[in-house]
Image (spheres, helix red, strand yellow):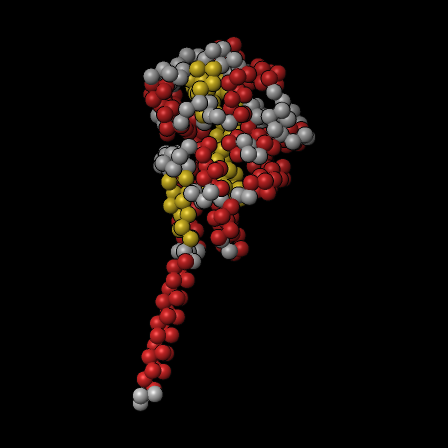
Amino acid sequence: MKNILPWCRAAILLLVSLVWGGAVVAQAQVLQFKWGHVYEPTSIFHQQAELAARKLAEQSDGKIKIEVVPASKMGQEADFPLMLANDSMQIAYVGEATLAEGYPPLSLGSYPFAFKDLDHMRKYLASPLLADLMKGYNEKSGNRMVATVYYGARQVTSTRPLSKPEDFRDLRLYVPAAAAYQLFATALDAKPVTLPFMSLYGALKKNEVEAQENPLGIVKSKKLYEVQKYVQLTAHVYDTLGIVIGKAAWARLTPPQQAMVEKVLVETAKWTNVGVIAGELEDEQFLRGKGMTVTPVNRQLFLERIVKRATPEQQGARPGDYAKLQALAGPN
């Protein structure tokens, strides 16, 4: 009996250690990611992120948990590429003009007036050209851009009418820091103002900034109609966001998990694209209802100013890519 007891105790200890060890391993297999962005919780982009988080939690049996952090609470978009690289953020929406700061060929889609219309943009989203640019970004950065989302046509709002390029001279115009947006302002001889996105409303209200450019959905969600009177339908950039996963976060996923994440993000991106496109006409009517004056402009006059200042290649596009992009639009 004395000889048996030590063996029993050893077996029990071994069993306990195996159970405990298994629990630790199971716990370690739960991946917790933070998805940061600068948009309001009411925006369709936040809704997509939340939808993707729910789907991935369900499909992974709780092994992938994503916390979506909206409204610049984790920082400004310009900081996101570095945060993804150092793993302080695992997933982010990042404008492709901002991503182009690290991989210049992506500037192609943000070159002002590169797209003739919305249908041209749709073809680009589904094109091998964009897929190749995304691949190039992934190889250069080490991060993983898994999907591209249509952000909306960027329009100009202001406190006074701006019907022609000359009206922009010396205008204090808010634009993001990325080179493509700066080009739009400087080519029109405006005075570009860059400030944190969360500060835009206050700057417009105080008249520190006279005008700004963003999709109409942002004008609506940020309530800029309260501090702006006019909308100029320039559609100078049909803008996109990359959904980017940091290098370290992507490496923590197993190959089957990577495939699952990519599939869910691509599917929910398509849902978002449909919603953004449908919402643009609704947003225009909403802003008219809020008393804003909405008018089209002669886009060709603006394009002529842009091309005199910088070509797509001078902005970072690869030789030949702009011609490929224009070919997507089909015959005039």
